[in-house]
Length: 314
Image 1: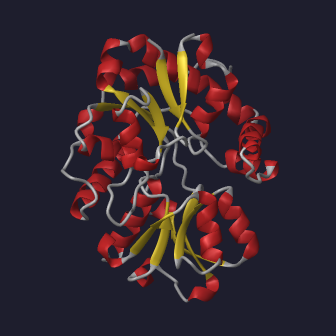
Image 2: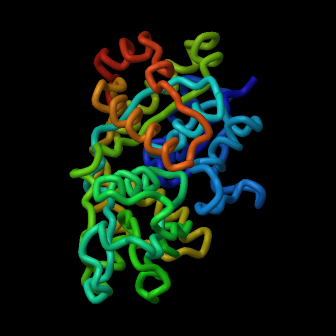
């Protein structure tokens, strides 16, 4: 049986790995699942749907065995009683994006967001960032109007006045910065560490340890290559965007990749504390169906593997 690996551009590591063929050198039978090919039923409304339902749908309907995402999807999977385990995390991606408003909007802090339209990619790390920001000023999810947007659509909507605030991510945020003056309402670093992360099903991790080790070995080697060759890595994203008729700037993508921490590390106590706090807030705000214990998703042998020196760049 082939190993199904979910990928999309927002998880830069898996996107590059998919295009470089490094994993296939260790596991010849790999099936890559493009997570952008979602059926209409998997789309969600952030006013009524749980965050990350689209990712959970793919995971549970046989779409993939391993995935790399942002902060929120594994919490949704655990709350939906999916038996998953963490594989690893990146370093902090605190420069990757932030919560912003246009300078002429009159909005100067998260406390001004009550009743406002806030654009996020619902179910991603952006849901957690916004929830942390609201909680810090005594607001809840019910106090705002969340709007589900993608990277490019969100920026355009903010500029058009269709959103009052937006969680922007580079390189798309760079285009908005060039078009208008922005006010930073919440920077990511002051809220949480915002790593990339990878997870899989517990039965796969326990019954096919070799496959998990191969994925982690390939990821670490490919990430080291990205660090040494950011412009070559950026070309994969530009080529993909242009093949779909989406404008993409090589310099912008290179700058974005240079600003991101590549590498796969064991889950840390700080990360697990942040995940637990996010899970508790999601439950309290009606965005998860039940309380969860994130530490139940940790397998010690995976951390021990990642604590060993990584292989040379592939």
